[in-house]
Image 1 (cartoon, rainbow, N blue to C red):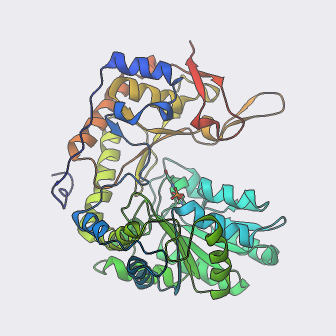
Image 2: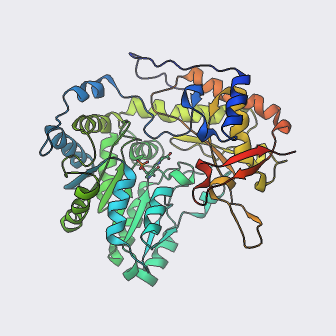
Image 3: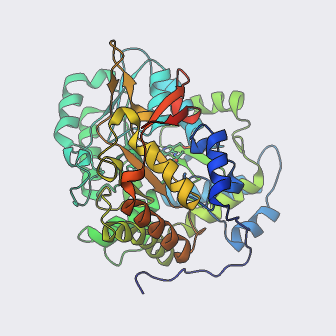
Amino acid sequence: MRFPAEPFRIKVVEKIRRTTRDEREELLGRAGLNVFMIPSDAIYVDLLTDSGTGAMSDQQWAGLMIGDESYAGSKSFFKFETAVRDITGYPFVTPTHQGRVAENLLFSTICEKGKTVISNTHFDTTRANVEMNNAVALDLPVKEAYDPQLGKLWKGNMDLDKLEHELKKNRDNIPLVVMTVTNNSAGGQPVSMENIRASSRICKQYGVPFFIDCARFAENCWFIHEFEPGYKGKPIIEIARELFSHADGCWMSAKKDALVNIGGFIAMNDVELARKLQQKLILIEGFPTYGGLAGRDLEAVAIGLYEGMEIEYLQYRTAQVKYLGDMLLDAGISIVRPVGGHAVFIDAKTLCPHIPAEQFPGVAVTVALYREAGVRGVEIGSLMFGHKDKDGKHVAPPLELVRLAIPRRVYTTAHITYVAESLAELYNNRSKIKGLALTYEAPVLRHFTARMEEVG
Ligand code: F0G
């Protein structure tokens, strides 16, 4: 056995369809070679995201039936609030319908021109919410985060010297420091407790609030449990409580480690700030005891938060992701190392050395993977983050990646093996993968709607 078997059995199944290569070719043509435009029922294994795509348990489905849909003071809210308080220790808990709303409430309250928010790496929506409010989003990850082949642990960490330097220089203009666990935009890499503790100490010293973006906190705690001295054998919930105790608050997209299809929250110690956010919440989401969610959704989050911290589940979960990574390495495919908590990132530059950055090697791999195998991944490279300079020359980001994000409790080992074997075959025929040229691009977030054609 290469990894622990699924710690669950399957009670409900959802049919997935195997399309023919001809059908996929036609769909790709209609989609302008953009896998975002492919209908999901024509996808065999969908690794576009691990967000909101997980399978709920029987307990969570049962929870839906007892969801209390009262507008104010719902029983389900109190269950949700008790769970969040129990795990994070923060008294003021505000539900939101997903993570980015929490970001919107927070950054529209604390950001303005001249302010800088610091993170180990802002996730895209976090960055966008900071920048929308005219502030600067500054990433200060450790330098190892930029070296994809370096198989070192804790590549999600914050660079402590740089953090201290910025706070010393500019503390009055830094309304918040946020640690993203795990560090999604840096390959889902974990952050060590030592780094969280030290970042917290520095923030306290300069009087700057320290928050956790905890979308994948349980996966991060699993890495601490496995690899950080002093934590082996400790229950994950205790590790989580320690992690949160170092911060002043957190926000969460519950669509990841809380194992639900929709949900989120923001929680904190500061009552004044919490009240300000709740005023805005009423305008954009709803009353503070439901925050854009149905009572049944709150119920499912309250249950999922604990299920996401079960050690057998986390062992299986992280091992399944690593299994895919190891199979790709065995096939000779370069990936970001070590494998993070929720996804495997393929290094498209080494898979397609014949495709220059301005011909989008990452997108070319996603097209080939869909065409040959019906598997959907997502490019994180020149299409998503590249731009043109004033002479119209393509400016590429440092890495050309394809993210294969694994939904939670959804695919079996056989599905994952199928993905790995399809990629191995693609790798053996990699010289046939063609570069792409844009035929349409939107002025912002072009990767969602871009249309392309093959060149050469
Ligand atoms: N923070 C992190 C670290 C995230 O990964 C995400 C979403 C968000 C915040 C925003 O939460 O989607 O509930 O509004 N990540 C998804 C992904 C979209 O595919 O990685 P949301």
